[in-house]
Image (cartoon, rainbow, N blue to C red; front, side, top):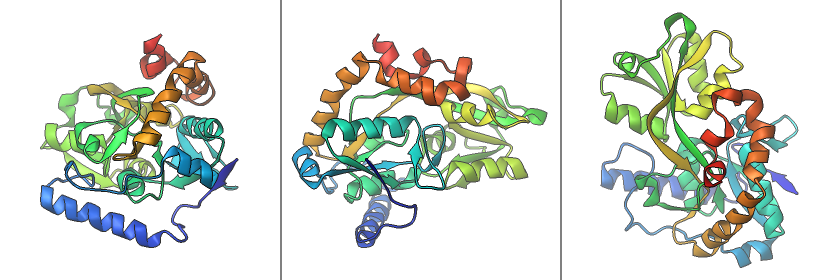
Length: 295
């Protein structure tokens, strides 16, 4: 059973969310980091609920995107669907509990799991060194690199063309970090979610959008007049479930579940249902799934 929590409505936990945001801001002030995610491993955070506590409660709280098809989206009736949602529901099934979906954005993923508002984050969460300082990642299930979307009338097909361009990036993502460190001459158009990035493209405020290649290809596959001219920019990285730093009980459980999921090609089946219709030959399963690479 899945439990819906509407975006912006967090009864009984508003205080913890505010505290988490304040903590994140304080950490940034100390570290001087431009991202909303701390990389200071010395900072102590809530270690989260272990497997026994989750089972006793009857519910696992999982942070997901409510607005990023085909990975996570919620309809008008509060029903979630998508690739990450399939994984979340399987976690609940194997734990023997209901799933409560907690809507997150890119820059609230870390505070949401740090505060205990969510037990697990499943929101196309790329593993990197900065994030490893503040959360623990389970074994990965997906591979990712960056892609560049641009209008067909002024297509960007070479990274050199990014210099001087107006590039939309979502705050708190690897795209934001990459563009600021590799392309200082880019005029970044910073937004809070993918729908705002695509709006900036459509109204001309941005001439390109830098985002995970899977998200880029999914959008351009259904949007006339735009293409993903660069499908792989930067190093290939991996995506994994995240738990609160120090939550060894839940982390070990997630890792113990992974061989079974891979053995039955769970992620491949979910890819066929959710991703293949929009990604197709542009990003086949063997290029996207860790499960396929593991054979």
